[in-house]
Amino acid sequence: MKPSTPKGTRDFAPALMRKRNHLFGVLREHFELFGYAPIETPAMENLDTLTGKYGEEGDQLLFKVLNNGDFLAKADHEALDARDSRTAAASLSKRGLRYDLTVPFARFVVQHRNDINLPFKRYAIQPVWRADRPQKGRYQEFYQCDADVVGSDSLLYEAEIVRLLDVAFAELGLKVNIKLNHRGVLQALLEVSGIADARFVDFVTALDKLDKIGRDKVLTEMSERGIESDAAAKALDLLGAEGLDATDGPLASSVVGRAALADLARVRQLATSPGAIPPLLFSPTLARGLSYYTGCIFEVEVDTSVLAQAHIKMGSIAAGGRYANLTEAFGGRDMSGVGISFGAERIFDVMEELELWPDEVSVGRKVLLAAFDESDLAWAFAKTNELRAAGIAADCYPEAAKPKKSLGYANQCGIPFAILIGERERTSGRLALKDLATGEQVDVDTAGAIARLWG
Image (cartoon, rainbow, N blue to C red; front, side, top):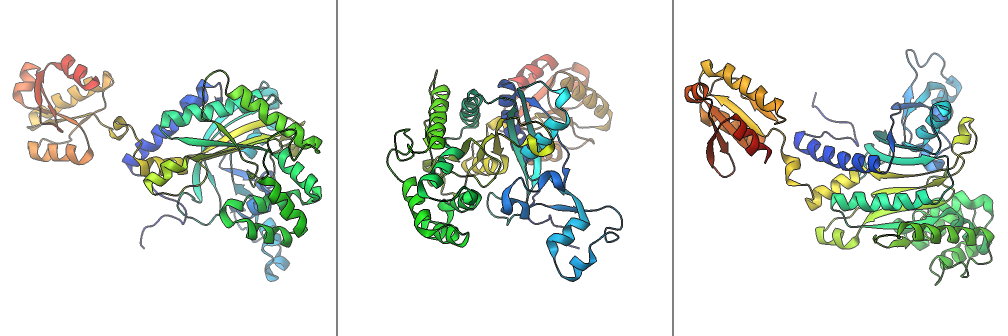
């Protein structure tokens, strides 16, 4: 059997894992800085927790887990014989792998309502699974890094998310554009274009593909979804109208539209004062396919000039928004929330392409100690533990060996320093610390070695 990973998944060797840990560490540091507390939820959720929360396309991408034991015992055999996969699946599977971290968070809030204080701010860094077609920047197993706050309607939290995005990506060295829209803007577009509210999901689902498939194909899809062609064309025309982001502009006749634009203005005001951040880009075509958003919607893209310089293409690397009734779906009272999800895999791929990793990220073990003779090995091991106690990532070559062998191992592993130990070092306590990059070697005591290795 030829070893392989499942489609849409990948392994990460030590060098890549150090980079990923750096990425997760930067995000975790900023989540904590902004007052978000860590939680974790199971990899699996009950299917009734997941279904109906992500729109029709999202539901199709759920990974379902077969029931334990003889999963055919209670199967709907009529559905199986009729090749009715949807009905059959319901009898074969009661659980699924989580699709994102937001819906499990809403379930968590309702289930643990008596144990949390509102507003409740949480972050989570965990893998999610989607049965999507794998491609560059899109995987079937990937990590999300989410920050959410639930239990408050305050737009201050939308502004806080903008700040969080700004400082986190600045720390990572990525120049980004933060796009902002509001579900109320999209509802107002339907209203002034003469599209029925009942077609909102159809409209948003098609509109979310505008950048990918273009205007003509979006109009075709809207028509296929039952949206009248002239009304759809009017809505798309309005999206390019001048002054759309003004409360006295093309959406002025809509109460919902004016309120949404007022919210967006307030978020911009809070986010940009005091201090300067990259300008927030009002993006009326930003729809986001997930059906649970009810207010502001965020999306972050790497600046096009950066992508062009590196000759790479990449979609959004973070996204989120305001949701007002997600907890209600789990029997809890209606609690408003807002959150952001950092797309760790895409961020990682962009940083890898642009070589944005700090030099120290590639270093694991800082120094290798190696003994010439078997009689010196125990002393070398003891000295290794002494360095470890001082916080130095040290390793001891496991056998007495000639320098060519042990130093070759250190070079292959990317260990920057080596200490070769023989009778002289063991009897004098002095250490020959060698910089393997420059070839420089210094004779120091243990304290001196620790000082240089820390430096």
